[in-house]
Length: 358
Image (cartoon, rainbow, N blue to C red; front, side):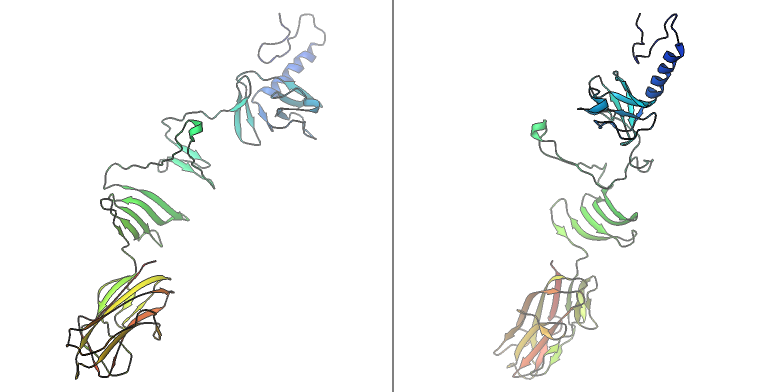
């Protein structure tokens, strides 16, 4: 008959043994060290400097000093000495410093996280999941990386999201302080949309892509087209702002028909153009000019044009086009000029347009 138990190697009290309490107390000491095993660390290779009675550690590989030769064993500090407790297959240990549960598989201590998680109703990572958010994670970084060819993978990585029907929603919600600031995805259709919001209730589409054609639309891009509904008289040798007092469209309301000028709502590159149609006053010898002007005084480079020679009333037109990089609050207006003779810029056919392009 063995002197110790099979699994925990607890010493038996033998028949006719003297001082049976010594053997009994040794058994209790081992049980106290192993039952509900919780260790301070699993990587130390030398005993800590000032252990407290009852401290336990899983000894790391390459141990030295009092732990020499104890690799992967449990070391228990009790009654002023380290006691070696060799692990058996199936022992479990909670590592206090890491908050992980280990199991001894016969050759080493391994994590207890299962290789497969199937049909789980709730999963919370660093937080508590609930019925509204059955998968919840609270962390500061996340990584998805492709399984390489050397690891038996393809080297590719796809993240797939699927909705049941075209009329359903599918997307990413981006929030600040749990207030939605942006939505990216397929909302109410299969058309890709990027929408933004200041307060989480009213949303504006910044980008929309037709999934059938690939055509991109920016429905809230600053853009306008305006025209004059009356003949603008301009005297000789005087640059005069053309009264573009009506708009066919005016996204973002950046063009003001009252002041006849466009105001940049944001910094960026803008493309502008204009059509100037001559209408005779007293002579067809008028020399018609046009230009686009920044902030009421600076001619935008490349926007100047002139037509000289005899004209036919309401038949001679001048086209202008130029790009300008503007800062928020900059204004652009259309100006006309006649030399030699005065004249009119004709109603309905004199127009001014522009759009943000970058």
